Length: 331
Length: 154
Image (cartoon, rainbow over all chains, first blue to last red; front, side, top):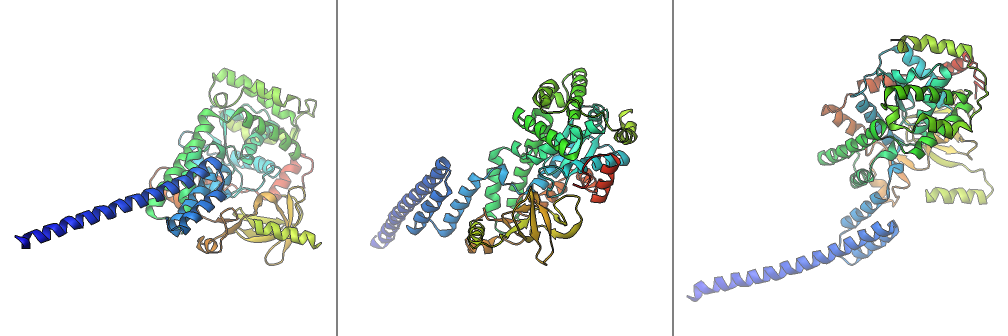
């Protein structure tokens, strides 16, 4: 009998010891988590990374968390503090490329080499006078085969203009006004500001946690998901919801200054907006009308800034505009 | 950044000409003979390379490249962050924070773009065609002269 009881008693004791050990582990882990959450919460509410550093350092010195865990908390806190303004020009470039690629799923590019060449000459000769003439991949322009009155500025400098928008421009000066407005959206990084903060925090956390340049499969999948979400945020703003009125006003005001620096009469901005207003009324609220303040309100905003008594459009500029664009707009 | 700021302040205190190391944050920066995007190109500096930059003047820094060439770069081509082309582990070991260093090619990058391409989610054909539209300074100068735009060489 004893021979049979002894092993049972030992097993019970082992179970008891095991439970006690488990209780200790749970208590220890709970305390550690509480301290960690306390640190993270401090950062959340104070926004101060230095406090996080002190908290994690104390926790590490007390032996509650490992050096690796402390570093992880620090990286997480740093990621929480980052915004769209922390995206590098290189990251902006890749977002802009994907935004353009996504816009092409809805708007077909216009394969007219001469017209696109002229558009790039005009656009790039304006962009050099921008407050931000250098982006990671430079400014590039393309026409879209759509009758909708619209233009899009993808982050990093990829600018798209519809055939319908071209029809609102009577001469080169007015097309310069359209392009100047879009260049100024790029200059002010308005596209990037449309990305939801939650996506950026996720992305920055993944980026901070991965020390190697090449991402592992899991990290790459997560980062790609956040990237796609970020691109969708920008495309949704460009095509559907539009920028804020403040951002549009900023782009218009900066565009007037840009036109002047580049030598174009700033009154072209007003005449272009007036013609666009007429066309948008006819179009019944599509394209630009959906995503921009009314042309009339934009004219009122910049009206006082421009010189309405400026010179008539230059005849050579009118001629080259007509040569390049008439085949497109008269279709 | 703090280290660079302290170095710049010390240089001012010592009455020296201030030259701050700045990193090129665009794919290829063209160093110009004068502070103008239409100025003659005297050197090209790749992404991540450091230049010694003087005091900002109307948006332009006078710079000296690593191989001693002097010219001008627009401030939008430069970053105060050091851009490293390697893994960040060395920098982490030396205690340099991410506010001071950016790792080139990290984050939303070519690897992410390639994944979208391989998953068949986005077609970049026209994006690449569009990016191939290059216009050089001579073409812009001629375009501006033909269009009677004032200040064609500014």
